[in-house]
Length: 233
Image 1 (cartoon, one colour):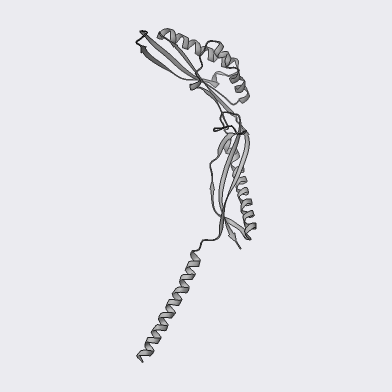
Image 2: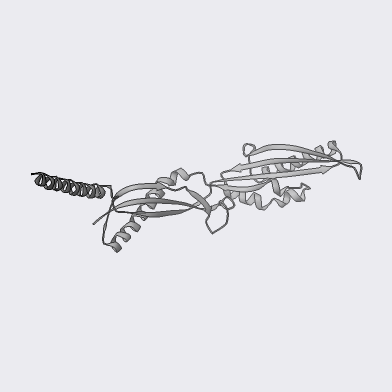
């Protein structure tokens, strides 16, 4: 009787162990992530800048503050007159501040004075800005010392929001095409989107110019999306 009970208990234990094994295998299958593929889609678009900003920096130097200030005033008048001749209205021109630097030269026994000024021209007429920038030698010939370290011309494309929706859709379609090709090569089918990440929009020079693209009106907008698609047999 005792032996029979031991056999029965062993069979029960074996059955429970087997049941536990099958349940464990079943849960393992449930935990397995669905098959998927992660691909990237790229969209690019050539655009033309619609805003140009030119910052002009001047410097007047000497040993007497009053005379240096007078020269700085003449520099400002020259810059404003030049921009007006180039067709800029007063609303498109602004003074962006001035600074004075003084230091005493003990060897010469004089006080050195430098006054730096900044002016900015801003317009949506990009072609006019390009013509004015090309003619800046007129300012130098008039006796104004332009400071290259404090100025420069920058082009901006301000209508990015207008092209974003279409470019995101284009990048997503490109990602789907890549997923379809992967599925065809692996004998599977592409299902729905599991996850998707939109990359940052970048603006560069259209013709391979280095930098952020602000040095040229001919620019390229680019976006990369990363999409994970489900796969089915």
